[in-house]
Length: 216
Image 1 (cartoon, helix red, strand yellow):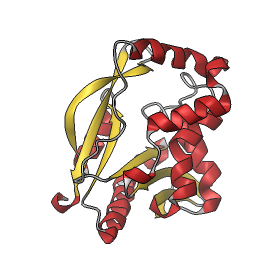
Image 2 (tube, rainbow, N blue to C red):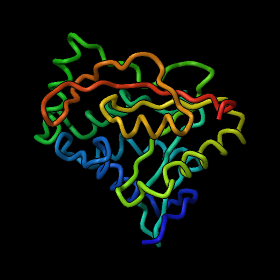
Image 3 (cartoon, rainbow, N blue to C red):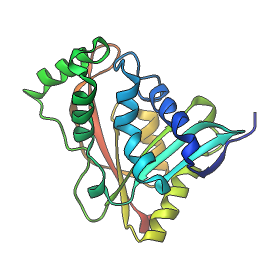
Image 4 (cartoon, one colour):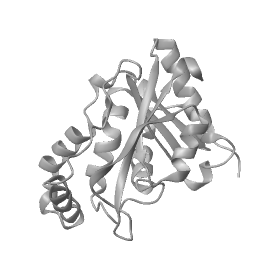
């Protein structure tokens, strides 16, 4: 199988990016087991980036099939926070009433009584930008993820952004190792994330990671 070509996002990629986000939305595995509404999941995690900031999106393409993507925001103040995006989706899609999402959301409400939701981004001028990256298994080789990150860093440097941040699950050791190889470091302690569970039922933690572009 040929290695993917990393290129800029095109509007025709939108449906594939949305499908890929859902297919890899739980630490690289499908999100359907805990979030059973495809439309809202794709809206929350991709719509701003593909629809409002497409120049900050890149894909890994194998003969017209998108097998990986990176979507970003140059200045995070312009993008809705994850909390805001979820809130809008909850209202628009009546997610508290849908069997595929109600369990997760009511659990998150219960968790939040003792564990407030952490901020999705750290407001700090050193890291004004942020990203999300997802890869199908066939794109997790040959440095494809690193090429996507490098394409994003090149855009940020060209626009004068000094740094980038992201959040990932602390239990996703593979993702954390990947980001550390690409110049990110952990920022602060991992914190419990309301609602999120491993398949075993254990609670999950959110880890913020940051990167100053002058250091990579």
